[in-house]
Image 1 (cartoon, helix red, strand yellow):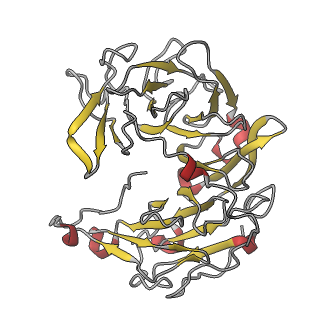
Image 2 (cartoon, rainbow, N blue to C red; image 1 turned 90 degrees about the vertical axis):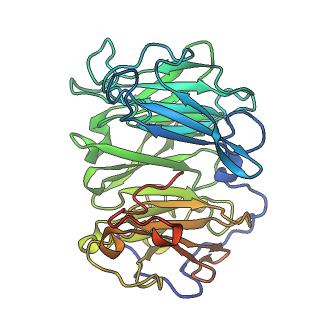
Length: 401
């Protein structure tokens, strides 16, 4: 895929950002889908997965901790610890289930409480070992109220690892949240998920995924790039394979893929035009100096029905953005997040370089504007600034979504 030259002015970072007359009439998907208030008190909560946690003597059974929000922020003292031994989770915790490997959330049943979706890719089921499962945990005023389990079968005899990645989004266009589930090489779409009755689970076979056949899907993200009310799904795989899924003629299918592109990404509306943009982290480019790309959303979805238009792609580097020298091995773009930090309606970019400064690591925030990202008002964070005195901490290896 072609790209624009590395761009990052000290004032405005974006180039060729499309303009739209109806930008004030639509709300971005990220704004409409907060989806992380599990007890319905109006404050955002935080769910953290610990898939390698030992549960009742069973190594790597896994757990998830929900820390509840307050007017002062997250309160670690107010929390719920969830394992597969919890009374509201069917089954039991087992060695190497890895419950909590992936986490997503949204109000799946429309009751006003966010529901938690948790992947357990190491779960053994009747179809075989390590086929995996996904737990949908229902939110309620006093915490989790129950759950149901989803499973899927892989397209061959290898471990399916259903639940390696889970992404909540509105993929089918019916206005209700769905769950995209990725395994080792397969993707499933679960819709019509309710507390009673069977969910509809569609399976996209590995041979349809082009680059992911016999490769490993590592992560995914979703957002509405073309403003049609249906989210696109982007999954990332081993050796930086990237694939774009969307709904075509009532079928969820791959419409574009590329090798050697991004290994991480996130959706958000940077320029507040009502279309969600996709930022890709590309930490292994340029001898692991790293870079990031922005695919600008518009009515055609990144400029075309079959993938991004090179004229609507902005490439960012650490040096060009005035964030210090680009050095071999920094892995700028290792993790990227788009979020509205100051609630001005524009998506801000958090981007990391965990191997910056002899693996100490660094994280930067670049504010969004109507013209794109800007270095004016940017912030930088490193371990010493936050009181972490641990050389080689690889600060920024993971960011909360």
